[in-house]
Image (cartoon, rainbow, N blue to C red; front, side, top):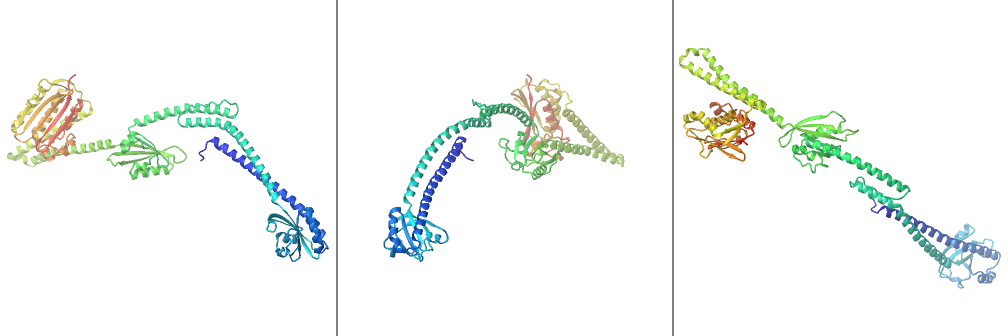
Length: 585
């Protein structure tokens, strides 16, 4: 594409056309004048050749020599009489005829043998000039076979050159004048077009509604009016399109699903932030990249390729695991159009659903297992008693005691399940009111003091705890939280251990801490200890009578009262559980 402006392109086009036209015209005129001058010389030489041929008819060379010399002075023409063998018989411009070459092979002589005349123009070494030769054949004479006349063309060529120079000078002057006129006309023609071009460039750059002002009544003026109307219409339409695009972008950006739009070549047209979070890429520079640069799953790419290749309006679905371990559901649908113009990919994050499904399955399995164990023990003991154990006075008490223990365990498990279900359902109504922490902690210590003393443990309050600190909580819920934490501390602290309770206000909240010197929890198990039925040491937990739901109940109770709980532990040195609840306003 040319880099020149429209003005220069038009000016150069017309300028070259004018220069070429005048150049061709000057060349044609100069050539025609020169050719006409040469034709005139040729006609003159032909008439003289005919005259000399008639003069030489039937005469001897001796008689002709004097007449030719006399005629030479009158007509100022070089005359050459040549014999049939090509020897020069008479030459008006040379006396030493013996030194002249044979003329039989000269072009004009050869032409005259088959045509009325032979004509040739060349440089003559005899007279040192450019000459035109005209020869004619005279077969009726006995001695002179060819008559040749010649005139110099140097002056004709010089006159033609002078005429050509005059023609070129005139053409150059005319060209300059024409170029000046072309400059004015081109500028007048292209200036409105340049303004329209600048206006179109401004619109292309985003200046919708840009107007041009051309005060002319011709076609360019009418074109400017149409351009201004088009610019106004574009401004309105682009404003509407921008509003629609912003609304669509806002809707897509606020979606919890990831959305990616691609064209038929799998170049990304749009990707919302949610898609970037799901597939771990930046949406700022996603447009224009290939889909396979972002999604590395072969099954996804194959599904997209099949959707683009096959003309089907029904969407396609695929569930896959992303590289980061996320579970995603892909929904692919073609963009509308006659051919595969592209597709829309909608990603649903099913990680949480899969996790909840897994937890549900684990919960069902764990509940089934936890219920099966005591029921199996009860059933075994009852069967033993039925099969004759009732008559064994020494051992039947032990079997009945085991049935009673497993019944209590089963009852505790059912109560914990009901409590957890009630808390999670949100049907439980909590009465939040200011409570003295010291009273609730002391009550919990009193309830567990006997068990702690039985294991020779020290269950005590921290000396730094302030008796006046209040917490906004439900009394029953907070008591259950403290009982579960203290009960766990007593269970997993060996004999002679220390269990200390403490609390302190901090940033509008109250922290309640239960610290023990028990067996501790491995660091790898800390993130999961608040899950239902999760046990660090399953055999030991069941041996101690735990249901595996205590910490899960604590977590849900704390969250229900807009609080939080955290745990820290060192294996073999003890554990610390810290509950954070809001203070009264």
